[in-house]
View 1 (cartoon, one colour):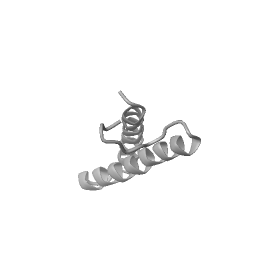
View 2 (cartoon, rainbow, N blue to C red):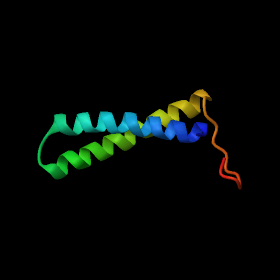
View 3 (cartoon, helix red, strand yellow):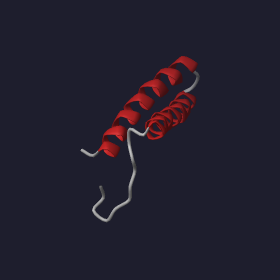
View 4 (cartoon, rainbow, N blue to C red):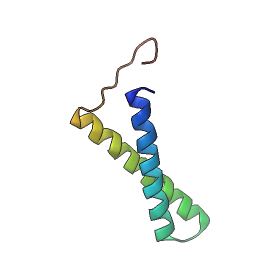
Length: 67
């Protein structure tokens, strides 16, 4: 698995976990919890990726062979 794919999996896991926690903590109806979870998961996942890119741990390149 490439670095970018590994980071995407980690960011998704972290973002999903935090998003689910916040969604349940906020409470409300099912739709509200789902939307809150989704928004927080995207924000946290994006932050994880951004911090890794800024730190120089991961470099993203577009190439013909997908690596």
